Amino acid sequence: MNAIRVGSYVTHSQRPAWGLGKVFGQSAAHVLVGFADLPEEERFKRLEMRIGLLQRATVGAHAQLDSWNVQCDSTCHYIAAAEKPKRHGKTVRWTRTDAMEQFVNKFSGGFPDAWYRSSSRADHVARHDKWNELLSGARLRQFADTDPVAGGQAIVSALSASTRSLLTAGELTQLRDSFNSNVASRFLLIALADLLDADRPTAELYDRYVAAFAALKPAARKRPLSWSLLTALPFVAQPSRHIHVRPPQMRKAAAGMGFDLQFHEKPSWKTYESILVYAADLLAFVTPRGGIDMIDVLALINTTAE
Image (cartoon, rainbow, N blue to C red; front, side):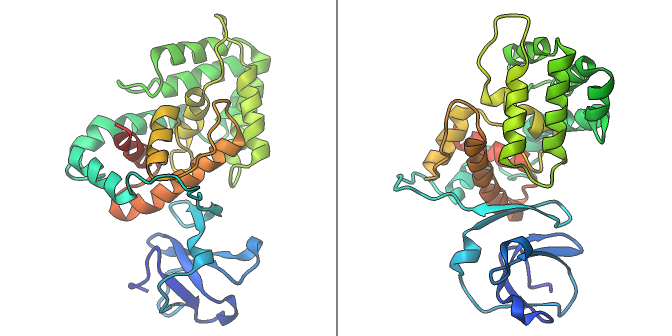
């Protein structure tokens, strides 16, 4: 199966009835393949990288398979799939390749570039490592049961764990001051844990998380709930699945590529789902070019929006 990689069209040698498939994920030992002829709940298969199991198909394109944006983890377990964002007659000012060229102009070695890794990626990794140290596993739920306010402050510590912060000083202060009630903090910790523990985010889980976040009341004058604050926590916790959203950069990059994010200033699942589909499309593009996760996708978006 050496000739088979992400993007290859394949058939299963022992399951011809599955029809044509496409490889959406690849690790050292497995591939994730989606088969067009299978029912939606059965179409994604995690298969061993075994010689002869899959056969490369001689097709150049397939409308249904090519319309899917598929997310999987690093070992090819299926996470989620959605149709690619549609281009609603918007003017395309640059392609993903153009965006990558702009990124390489800034960081000559691309995503493996030492300057990029030390000046940009390292800060995100430091925050994610701190999150794992303080809040990995069942720690969010343990804090919710024992000391929700302390759990909230652990979240703030993780988000602050680098010299270059993900949030502004004002946003960090707002978040820190918001964890002042055990009841509201517990609601937020549980909703966040439910979102992170799910196989994939859903409207119900995300809406519950938004409601819990909105219920936090800082000691100072309450500011409107922002996309940046709301998306920072899942991104730092799971940069393989979630992305941080600063609307100006996100909207500029997406609009330039002709993607409709269905954006609304008030945070909602509908907009975030569109953003995840857009980000997953970029992740599929950057992975063969040395990108690893949504940290690299975010770097590409920010560079494109400069």
